[in-house]
Image 1 (cartoon, rainbow, N blue to C red):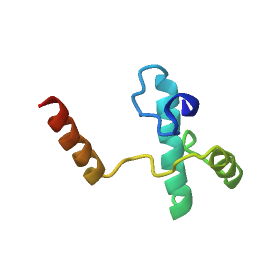
Image 2 (image 1 turned 180 degrees about the horizontal axis):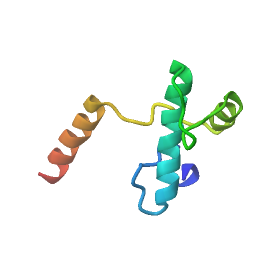
Image 3 (image 1 turned 180 degrees about the vertical axis):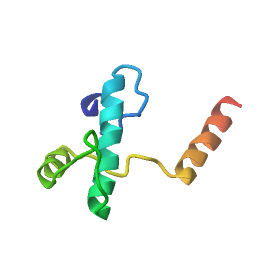
Image 4 (image 1 turned 45 degrees about the horizontal axis):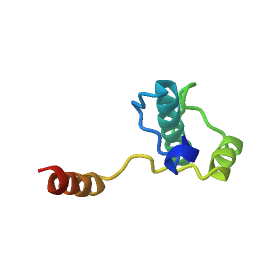
Length: 82
């Protein structure tokens, strides 16, 4: 995915590989829980070693874009397509 799109921001509902989108989303949730000390579910569990592995390939933990970012994209879309 990164080689094709230039990032690790796989959409949760990635049509070409739905399992990858869900997996990435679960890693982000597990990372958030890990950092805040919350209990992690089995599918979200992540260790410091796995965090390092993902960071070594440029994994973006802030996967969810902010409201402002998406609003700007919407404005751009409206300008281009009406």
